[in-house]
Length: 231
Image (cartoon, rainbow, N blue to C red):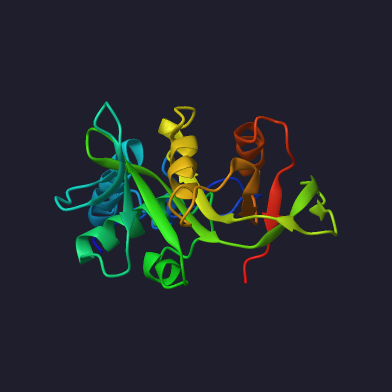
């Protein structure tokens, strides 16, 4: 690292000496928009940040030609299923999406581990401009518990029937309030079992603060939110 010689600048007696060597700021900072840690002035870091920030603004670029679409929409967007044996570009794109959502969801950023769970269904939402901006991961379950209070995690002791468990559900912040989470959940409950699962039999595992209002609205505020434990 290059330095330039300069006499130390003396400050007041009750303050510490400040040395100015013209060095880069080596302490990483976190971008307030995309959340990435990077070093300002470090060329490779700034390039990676610029690329990641662009993806965060628009979602992960989707360039897969052969896709397993479960639903097409009139505007060209679609919901696509992801399987464990999908090609590497598919898995890489989904892992980027998981990493992007890691501030909201603790997924571990490895879709292969998620897909290796038995009977797991993983769906992504692709925009008309071919960017992935949301995903849902569900599994068939048998029972759950009605949630009494989210803050205290209080649940009713008696289990109730539930057929579809939501492990993960996330939508890019720029695309929220566009019914994407609703569309993902609708397609998920229509494909996780042989028959379509009723809305009232959908449960969520370890719900986040954002999940409770969504699920309450999804149930039309008529039924309690159901939660279950991830085995």
